[in-house]
Length: 131
Ligand SMILES: [Ca+2]
Ligand SMILES: [Ca+2]
Picture: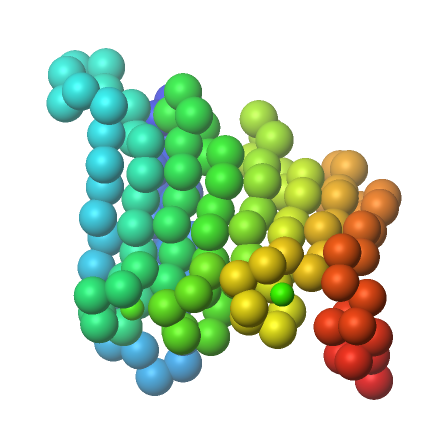
């Protein structure tokens, strides 16, 4: 089945896989939709994998299509990674806040799943993380 319903399922499956180690098996899914009508489209999905009331992942949809995902990768309540998707559902850009100060440090651009460009916005943070 093609359309928003399929998109929802994909997002839910992805979200279910994303639970941190040790988190309860059943995350809380909170959907927001446009109007609740028969052609309703998803607008936003919040996933609280450990059920502490804070969503670790927020999926935003445009015309029923996944467009942006905000992620709290370490569960500190701050969204430190933002992925942007193309119409095929591939990541085209990832913004990362490596030192978790709320400001993006690296933007990585992808084409067809491969990195084509990386913008270093905060060289100090990025260099400090080099092995
Ligand atoms: Ca949580
Ligand atoms: Ca930062």
